[in-house]
Image (cartoon, rainbow, N blue to C red; front, side):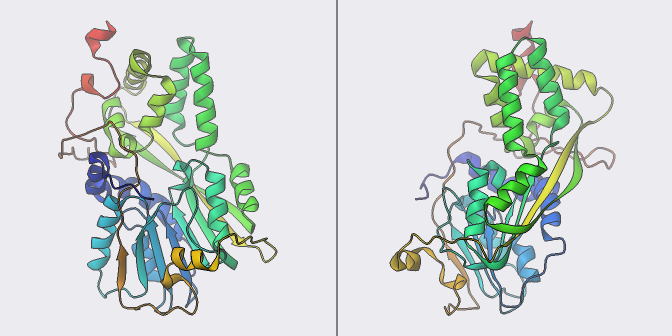
Length: 365
């Protein structure tokens, strides 16, 4: 059940996402996701973890009048933004359904329902990515397509090299091992991605990789950029431990970034991966749900033979499923770009010594 608690952090994320994160992150992956995509005229489409409505809006533009699209998102704060965005579309989209529904631990849909299932930059943040992809395959009908985008091996390599160097230099070998495990699990190799797809009952599997870069003018901008602060930063800090131990590690990382990249941008490589496969005709489908359970869990707009109002954007808003977070950024101001370069904007004008999780200079001295 989705939680009824909507955190300040998620409300903040919903407000800034389209301006601060979507252009430098989600759209980069989404362009790859949508590349060469062909949607059957009467397709049943599922967009998992649709966030603020991207790539939902792109799917709406590409689908035919006879196609139906259901988009699900676990955070009602993000889904509120998606709903308002879709309501402003002209002409008014038909056959589109939004649901406040988490993708974990399993999708609340029957087997073999959809012709196309997509998930943009979300699977790698789920507790069990392999199971998540298996669920995407389960709800895809025979001959249907699954498309997933995630950052793959080689992403954030510049940051991880510095992180690892700091840990080794200070004899934190157990922490270095945790970092290695995190990198391997969070940013999988190509063969691992292919195995996930195959284990999900998909064939003709492929993994297409495309690189892009994020540019930062300093360590402060890096740690305070919304794409980092609202993204992987909490996990990176957890690897280092807690309290003073974590603060010490991140202080040295900060110092190293500014020393190594003095006078030039801190450039971060992201390797975007498109995982793609077709539901095999021979795939075994095990239906454990009763007919009554299926009627409750499957949206009427996603089943052949159902007849919902094709002209309605059907909104079913539940509450937020995200966990509370202690980060509580209050500032609404953002710095601009530098000399036309696509630098990532930091969240607020904050002094170097006040970066969350980093000690002040006098504490280090």
